[in-house]
Amino acid sequence: MPVELTEHDPRNENLLDFRSDTVTTPSDAMREAAANAEVGDDVKREDPTVNELEARAADLMGKEAGLYVPSGTMGNQIAARVHTERGEEAIVDTEGHVYKWEVGGLAQLSELQVRPLDYGPEAVPTPEQVRETVTESALHVAGTGLLCLENSHNSRGGVAVAPEAVDAAAEVAHDHDVPVHLDGARVCNAAVAQDVDPARLVDSVDTVMFCLSKGLGAPVGSMLVGPEEFVEEARRTRKLLGGGMRQAGMIAAPGLLALENVDRLAEDHANAGRLAEGLDALTGLSVPEPDTNIVLVDTAGVDVPADEFVAACAERDVGASTFGAYTVRFCTHLDVDEADVETAIDRVGPVVSEMA
Ligand SMILES: *Cc1c(COP(=O)(O)O)cnc(C)c1O
Image 1 (cartoon, protein in one colour):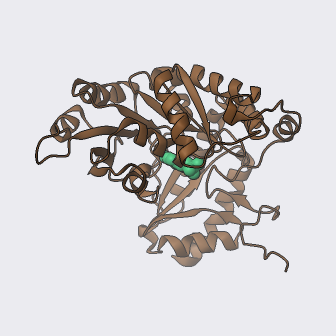
Image 2: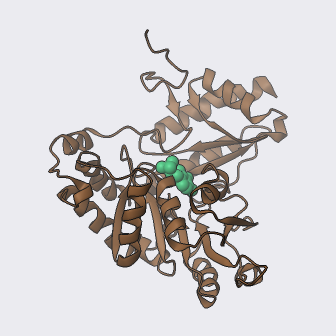
């Protein structure tokens, strides 16, 4: 039976796909690197390409060791499980990915009780908030086992959190012997946007997960980095969750090339800025200036629900995604350039005028 084409089929050459930065397809160089990768059994730690990727990822983030994992979700979930004891509390943002978009994994895989806290538009808890929320375990009390941060912050519109704000929150947690894990799926975006070294941005957190398969353009994989001892235990937990891979150098080789795409994220940010400006100029749409590569469009002013707006955009070969009842997300990435942004603005214009 032939596979049906979806409206976002990547073979539709006319499609400008802003749904996510996960839609990038590997470059020719990445495909070549995969084909020619030196490989071995990575579960036995004999894959030289994976070993190199883990070392380079750790180095980029200024941490002792790294672990290659199949997805960002697995990286976050492994981190939570290794950092905590069952029955503890994890402090998470009400809008955090680990809380909203990981299938309740903290409860399912680590038996944690989540303690959702509104990190606010700054996308990071204040030191006071952390101080008021951290609890010591006692006869009747779970006790805090983990503080989860996110940078850049996806659901809050790609907000890039400043290093000082990360430090301040982490310091309070550490004062209470609570470890801090950063969901840094797009931490390189956050670093580039603020012109700081990624290692500086994550200096005060214990562990970091970051995705190779988003803005950095690799086909598969994320990295979990942290102290040597933590990563050793994380490697065991990865095996437990079924993430022990064999000749994974085939997919790690493109990941090595992805690490060279950090600085060019600035282009995605410039394109996102231009897209936001162009869409904001359309009557009725409200689009705040983005920090990074995520543009959130408020469609309440034209009284069009997000899913209708997204469907109308899709009809004109512009991919966007529903992010709330009246919130639509556009993401810039490697596979859309400045000219594509201009074309997208031109295509969305009539969508707005016809629906409003
Ligand atoms: C995409 C994403 C993840 C999860 O990564 P997957 O590879 O899709 O599992 C985690 N956190 C944030 C903020 C993300 O955007």
